[in-house]
Length: 469
Image: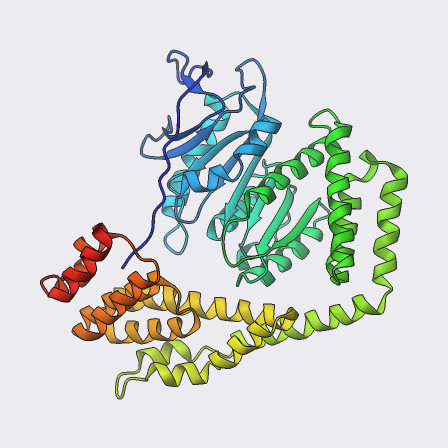
């Protein structure tokens, strides 16, 4: 099976000294540049990407952000926050070693190594340590905030509540985001409601997209929002310019949402903008934002939008609660279930049609399809590969590709499953489709043991040559 990895090289320039670590000479790190890999002092097997802002000096204290990607893509995750970290003087430490969908031990080791780094190795304001994460990394950041009780804020993207945390109460500010078609969109809204019950500052915002890290602009906004929370808490000096700029942008966004026929989203944005700046903002402007929110709250347009949202959120939840039969069906051997039967039972064609129709009903259908694709193309396939159930894995992937036929990685994994199941013709057809849909790793194809049975065939060599350049 294929898992993509992105590695970007850090550049070195303008070194400064950090405080001595464990009695050693002061270390020298670049400022204003993202360093690809730094080994932790306490455990050198644990590494992270490091960013020190250009203003960094050991004589001052700086906020620090620990970043947890669910696949340990340290550079990819850190780059989202670099511009805002530079603008506001934040240190970034992005782990190469955090993981999700597996044992917690790698995450425990990563956290045990990173926590001393911000306390001992860099000139960090200990009152202003934050954590950010995506998917399982967001859940890790949230649990870490609860467990330590020492984080000032958590930035969570595409995560979800965990049962063991449902009754917990934290003290950190929470900035939550999710893609509109993310299968974790509704869980992130639920998490925002949980945090609201704590009585702490909170924000939730959706961006256009599926289950993925937030755009860099939204990551930067999260840092600005945390800066404003630090002003409220007396952890940094107030800055009227930062507050005014943030408020103006949010009011403009709320007005744009209202004008484009999205009154419920506009209502929420007005409320969040007013709550965020509070006493730090212009009293008349904040009052006007609250008035605009109340005006919308009393409107029939918002009432209709709320009904539509409840209807389709409920339909999404009800649908997902009814697919417990899927795993046992894939495991069925005598006779094995056909992928076409599963496609029919899952009503995939109807969901795709509703998704294409647009509106909130379409968005909810897209999220449902995203949930199905993730379940079939990743979780079920992973478990079936591990069990050596190649034909069942191929069936799961065929159903997934009925949802997203453009996914080259899923076609590649289908080729692997068919090759292992001794279906060379189908395997080669799937491999061809993988390349047609963007798969381009000749190195992976050349060395993948799942494709061993195809290696010497002319068709395999032709497909390999087509991407080997």
